[in-house]
Length: 129
Image (cartoon, rainbow, N blue to C red; front, side):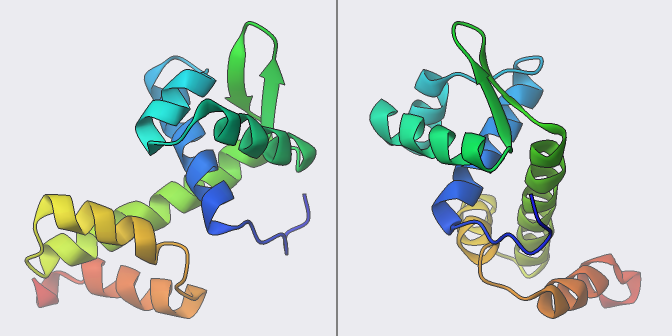
């Protein structure tokens, strides 16, 4: 995967969910669980997994589930870190946990690295607490 690869918002969401499920399930995720968590149908998950396989981000073997490649783990961890950072900022601003989580999911795909760096500085600056 080249460093300039830009995933669609949808593929980022799928990759992030695979990462979360792999963490919860000792290294593997399953199509059914991804579909349930993202409220999509299983054929949509299969299509997304095929795209992520082409990009060498996931490994999918019959009957064993889906796991992340080393590059997939790194990419998914970055996406999840953006999500947690944005959620932390929103909760620090007084947004409810539920809304902060939902809004962070939308925002994580569109902000520039410059904006994320500024948010990181804001969230971690104890003087602004």
